[in-house]
Image (tube, rainbow, N blue to C red; front, side, top):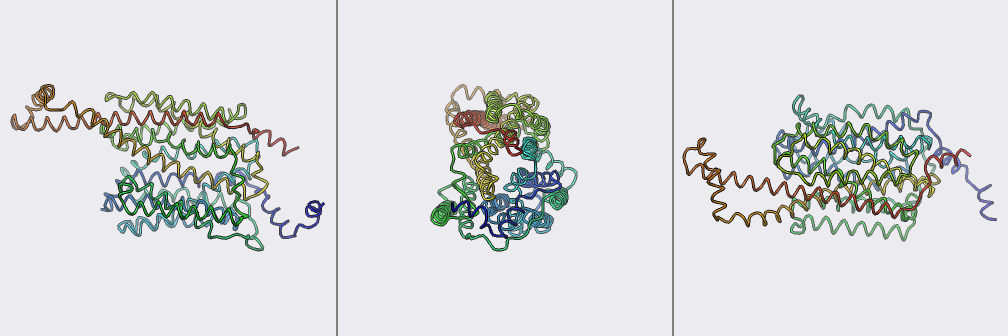
Length: 544
């Protein structure tokens, strides 16, 4: 009886106005969706461009490799820091204000970066500010898409979102090489000046205005700060761990211990003090937890074309970044075709099935690539990378659709805190997935390289087989040398280079097998997920 009275007559006027404003739809939904998609593209593309162009940037400004490694870390760490905090800010100010102000700050910081680039400390600060502002796009993207598109069209919005993320990841290598060849290193930062004004225009005229709340939510900012700081320190520890030799470095130990402690404090505060802007119970369901694990493992699939392929072509065949970029460009073209096809397929089949098919295609492609040999060139990879692009596009589109299906089935739209919590959770999974994937793969390659070196070097023992090999190499090199001793010395160097090449090839082959196994694990996790109603059926329920 009390519930009926409250639902009919006791709702305060301010709360009614706030609810009505939060449910308001913009009159320009396509502009709103385009704006957040451009924002997500800018966020991912800037980080990828900075990573790919790190060596060129280091040479241009004369910085050391140690200092430059922290520039990329500062940008990505800021993305992690703002992830949990955006739940608080989004609930307090609304998406429109956050995105517009963040876009202005992002554009200004990226514009100023080349002017302070020779001071690496100042560059790190500006990149951290840029990361804080760019990090607002991804958590709010799905919120804006779901709230501004009819549910029957959300599939295509998801397909555009998947294409947005994947294409920006793969095209960065080619574009960075073009900037260095035809423009200058400054455009690694100024690239954002092209897109940001357009996305601000879309956000200004697309996202609806919302009144400021009459009173601040009864929540405590400290819990969000503890979570953001803790996760950021863990991220920095993972990002710099391999370079600083992990637990042999006091910096890494301090990062990880402090990060784990602050994260534990944030969880304890949340359990003891309920927070109206964060709903952890909404996330504590089997499907959403499994989908978070799949998203983390999905990042392994991207390491094939972004890490293993460039390393193989660079070490074995001496490819320059622009040559590797031409190969990766094919992936973006195929994803441009595959992502919309995946969106149409989702109207007919279960998103879990599409996701599993995508992982199967990508996994089989990586297993095929594990049979590489020194005769493989960039052209050899074209066919396999076309299939890999289709698999990745299908997997990500099906994965994001499964996330939305489960979220809507659990009532994500009934409470703004639900969808903000969902966005924060999957933003954290996405960033940690990328960092965990890169860290594990780099460490795995080092371990496998050491193993293969130990095995292969046992056959180079100074015996007659080794001497015959050196003699053959020396006779080949003798005409270009200054004598027999010089030819033999050059033959030893050449044999060492061949050994390094073979070790790299075998380690990369093992890396492709690891990616194929991670795809198989993703398919296994998907098989444990329960059914969630399609978005089209939810649209019909809403209409009725």
